[in-house]
View 1 (spheres, rainbow, N blue to C red):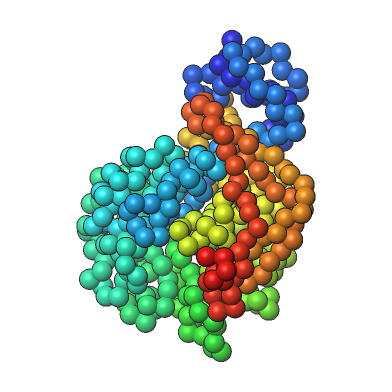
View 2 (view 1 turned 90 degrees about the vertical axis):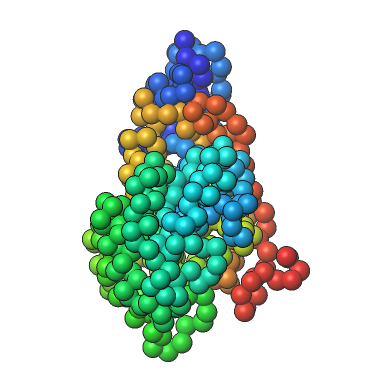
Amino acid sequence: MYDVLLKGGEIIDPSQGIHQKGSVAIQDGKISLVEKGESRAEAHKVLDLRGKIIAPGLIDLHCHPAGGFSWLGVPPDEIGLDMGVTLLCDGGTAGAANFDAMRRLVVERAKTDILCFLNVASAGLIVLPEIWDEKCIDLEYSRQVVESNRDLIKGIKIRAVQALADGVGLKAIEMAKKLATDLKLPLMMHQGETRERVPNDKMDDFSRAAVSLLEKGDILSHYLTWEPGGLILKDGTVYPELEGARKRGVVLDSCHGLNHFSFTVVRHAIEKGLVPTVISTDMASVVLPAAQSLSVVMSKFLNLGLTVDQVIEMTTINPARALGEEDNRGSLKPGMPADITILEVLEGEYVFSDGNGRERMEGKSLLEPRAIFKGGRMMPAYSGYHIPPLFTQTGGVSPLHR
């Protein structure tokens, strides 16, 4: 007799190519059975999930679950287990000089699992800009911290922003890439500077050169940005370096954020076959009004034409592979930890925002988390969806909605 039987739901597990009505059994905190059709299995607890989706536990590859550690952080469990996400990946909030504090104050206290990308800037994102001189980068110190924290650190992070371009320049990207390569880890690179694009914008040139350094398995964050440094323009122009990166196997991370996402750019990308490898939120204190939760960001892509199977793949097995965690997460294979998200597609009238991309979109579907299982333990979950605030033409939330 199993501990729990999730019965009669729509099982969607892209890692196994499964989309079928059936049941999932949990025993001793692990997936024990995935069965098509009506199950005759017995369990101490049986849940009727007809009309619901049974999916692997959702993974947010890029966010900042660092509440209490950094000004941009948010409490991890509020954007994690509470919102149907079983694994959060911190996108470089900490660097070598303060990673131990991040580990002790945030990671070890959270109920939600957290993995991290170590910022190549020694102090991380505590003060911005984080790199204004080569002395802000200590490769040997970073290497030591990674080797001491291999259980948590799954990649290196750098932001290709204006201050970097005007200061250390491309050498900083090369330094970060060498560190990642030496450690056999992916490099996660932020692209885009939050300001209006100008004619012959030099940030575009810098970003094109930086993206050309990325290799298979590296992660390009904010590739759907409207900002200078973005490789898809609002008129539909796509710089060839982006297509080249995709062909090399660079992970394309949608990474929503407040300032780095545009519905117009997303539509161009989908039309040209540049769909995300991974959907993530870049959730931070300033991002909450726009992104709201991982399931809300997934819902935006659903209403932009992607399928439920695609958005689940982009938030389960794809991020698990990007982290090298596919043997432990992102799947409902028997023997895997019972990390499961129960979702429901709600039909109605919904309004979505792309933040300072300055567009709103009406949609008919919302992916609503109903429950989550973490190691077999069940907890309630929800999307946190609400009508998004208005965003001004100069950037930021309207004073009426702060």
